[in-house]
Length: 108
Image (cartoon, rainbow, N blue to C red; front, side):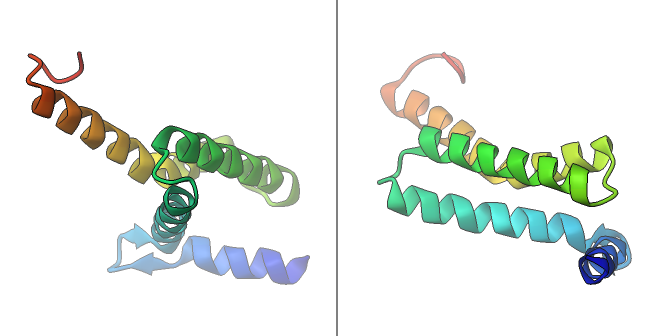
């Protein structure tokens, strides 16, 4: 277990370009990869892919809270970064659908 603590400690303390935590980059990339895989597997069902990824991310953060020394703020930050790609994809699809159908406003 100490090896895992050391490994994740190195990841969370490493900064890219002097300001960007490696932890954040990895959360985004893993969320992006899982979203793409789920969308392919689920035949582009974004809502279902979103909720599956959300469930996985919450389960991971709960596991981290028991096994590692993560704070609630770190968990919220990690969850937010993991979910940003599917959330933005949902907003873009909604906006494109509204602009194609000619409805007024962005989110009607």
